[in-house]
Image 1 (cartoon, rainbow, N blue to C red):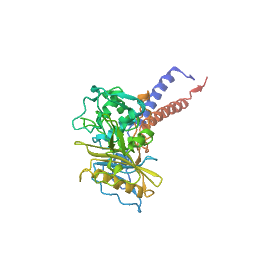
Image 2: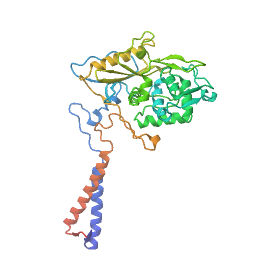
Image 3: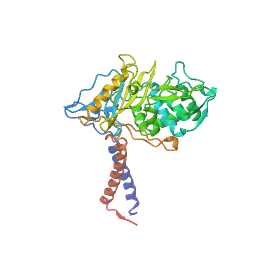
Image 4: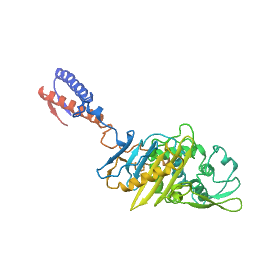
Length: 389
């Protein structure tokens, strides 16, 4: 572009164009007056609400003919459609709580692809070191040879921390496995989870949420090996000279210890520690639909309450089909950073029209456009001839 004019005109135009750009930029980037929301008495920004799943308390959007939600004492819970990812209802979905052995769902998602089920491994004594006091065990013994599939049945059925320790050792070690689990959680969009102990044993700073655990459960059901192990009620485990029977500790699957089996239950994983209380991720299939529930730390009753509250939520979810609107969704799988991709950290509701980052970008572009327009207008008013090369 060539601008033909006298030097005095150039100087005055330079000042004018700078002024135009400054004024335009200030107008574009300055905070705009908040518009009042009708009848609220507050600016619209102050009156706006975060996405449902980010809010405290119970979140449900029912129609007039919807069944009433059951009374649930758990500190946090969630009901979702496993196939669509739609969350039908939730209570404090992102509250960070200790997960106990439900964290083994993330352990399995992380390690299953790395260790083919047919591999045989002879256990070393050092691989069983560091198991927490009071841990649930399946009976893994040093010097014995196990197939990887045996160890996974020990993880899913008996919640055996000894089996977890051996599999973690085969996967590169305890800390490396924890780090890979953390990366896997982030790749799935599960941002509430902080992994310290891969077996779910209570450890300072180790937390997850009902939302994240549902994400892990949903991802697990898409993995054929995970789905097979988590739905197994009974199996044989290699012993000293002869195998012995082990039974899944998920009572909603087996119908044991005073808990009636839930019809159509697929499984997933239960857990308990003193700090976490009882926790459960459960999935069931009925009438062409698969529902997933998470229940974390019921505050009433005994050890069976977590199963009965999960039962109530599953019953409600199946009955509520077509009678509720979703309050959010479980995030889709993100690229796994362990595979060299950068994780996309996103939550359900982050794309609900909040326009994060767009106003600032629009302001800058608007300022540039307005400034350029101001310069062009000033040049024309001065009678300056503009020619394009």
